[in-house]
Amino acid sequence: MPTFERMALVDTTLREGEQFATARFSSAQRLAIAEALDAFGVEYIELTSPAASPQSARDLETIARRGLRSRIVTHVRCHLDDVRLAVECGAQGVNMLYATSAQLRQASHGRSLDQIVEEAAAVIAYLKGHAVDIRFSAEDTFRTDLADLLRIYSSVDALGVHRIGLADTVGIATPRQVYDTVAQVRAAVRCDIEFHGHNDAGCAVANAFCALEGGATHIDVTVLGIGERNGIASLGGMVARLATLDQALVARYDLAMLPQIDGMVAEIVGVPIPFDAPISSPYAWHHKAGMHTNAVLNDPRSYEVLDPAAFGRSRTVAVAHRLVGWHAVAERARELGIYLSEAAARQAAARIKAFGDEHELDGAMVDDILYEYAE
Ligand code: HCA
Ligand code: CU
Image (cartoon, rainbow, N blue to C red; front, side):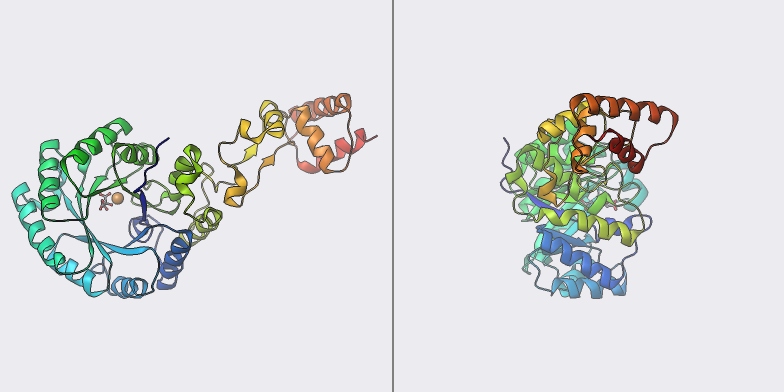
């Protein structure tokens, strides 16, 4: 079983998440989200650059000086003006990025690799004079030539950054590619390694997990995975991925807060909690087909890899549909205080199935049928 002893979560709901289509956080909402994430226990909270807008700078100051346990870091361009402002606002860490792929270098800033390293050196030299975490991320890592990447990462590692970041900016990387690239970078640097993966191809959580397996130490997530386009790895997805392997990997987090935090951010940005969200989907522990409900009623672990109680959730067993099995029918009857023999439960199930072929069922109709079979 992996231990990922040095693993830390960097929640970037207040930076990447604010790049989501419908997100615009007020100062009070930024603070509420930061406090909730801090109470949950994420190790880092990343905020929008103070250079983005005057209010963003004021909010960074407020949150950074709040005395939270999470380290407050801010995401900035690798420019002296921006990092100076970040330090002045009290950020405990500066997450810099520089586009390194040929595509983005051309479309974005037109600098050569030598120029990137030179500019990074000047900014890192300034930051070394301040007590802040220094992270340098190569935007669009997975479309950057590997030799170029290793050169940039080794240079900034030698200059003394605390972390380098690998960013799958366009969500193109495959899990195996992430593993391989992180492992190669791991062998080339001494500092910590952060991974940030977009979900364009639905691989964000898988890629983040492979990054950990390859030797990454820091994983970027956002609440519900919100971010540019369709977002990045979600906090809930990452926690679920880890918890299914070993609950000890997430024991330091206040897991029961997760559905609340997802609900809060969903409401703020005006989206429902996605039906496929790990842990907080209304259906995350909803069992329906007869074969499933029978086994789950015998032993929840038959179809549940996570214990709903650990997240303050509970399981539901659906009976108002034509896929129902007699075990679930008998269980529902017990809940109503009705005793049904196996034969009666089988007959009731057959009635529900036949009825369900003709009509849309609801719980009250099923209960009415069960009362008819009561002895
Ligand atoms: C973006 C930047 C970023 C940065 C990630 C990082 C990305 O495109 O808005 O700093 O590691 O996905 O590359 O979010
Ligand atoms: Cu991103």
